[in-house]
Length: 139
Ligand code: CMP
Image (cartoon, helix red, strand yellow):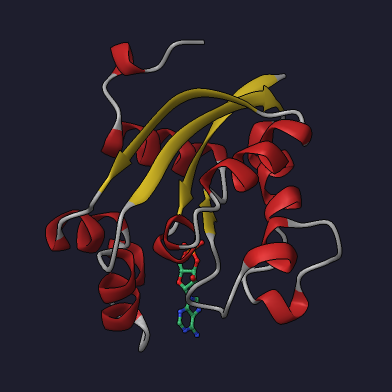
């Protein structure tokens, strides 16, 4: 089925002017950008978005990194969008990411790993609603 997922092009990628290169790989994987905006997250937004990781030892660093520069938040649409996006992103740690994936091509480290993607359809809906109003999504 055609579904939606949520993506973030992270500060390490925007800093290196890779917004287009990352988006091209998403599009070539069969995903369509149906909403997109460049924002500089506030600390409150980053803490709220990553609230599920609050108890993790890397939470503080993760928040600092995500507010260290602009990000591009996107809604992606396509056949089985969550899985399709996870496949093209590659493993969280670029050391484990397969050839041809975004993280293999661009990620600097497990933290500065260039992209975020929702891990389930349920979380995709929550994450999309965190950043976008329904009328900002144009399919
Ligand atoms: P993301 O998909 O955005 O969701 C949580 C993020 O935490 C993850 O990508 C990584 O960038 C980051 N992360 C995961 N594990 C670690 C770690 N051990 N150290 C630092 N950051 C991490």
